[in-house]
Length: 126
Image (cartoon, rainbow, N blue to C red):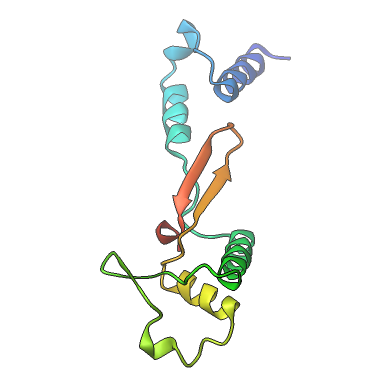
C-alpha cells in the first residue's frame, strides 16, 4: 500500500470514529472542509414511504382506539374541518387528512449511522 492510501484510510477511520485528529491531519485544508461538510449533513425533510406507512398505521390505530383526531388551526387544536366531514369514512382517512394538513401529533425518530438520533415532528417533514 502506498503512504497516501494509508494516510487517507487513517483519516476516514478517524472521521468515522469521531476521534481527535492528529496534528499532521489538522493542517490539511481539504480534510478540514470534508469534516465541515460531513458535520452539516442532516436527514432529508421528506417522509420516506416507510415512515409514511408507519405514521398512517399508528395514527389510524390510535384514532380507532378512541384518541380524538387532531387538527391545528393557528396553533390551536380544533375538530375535523367542516369541508372534510362528509369525505371521512374511517380512521385511515382521518389519519391521511391529518398528515396532509400537517397536524399529526407524532415524532419521527431516525437513527443515523454515526449512532446519533434525528428527531423531527411530522409538521417539519413534507
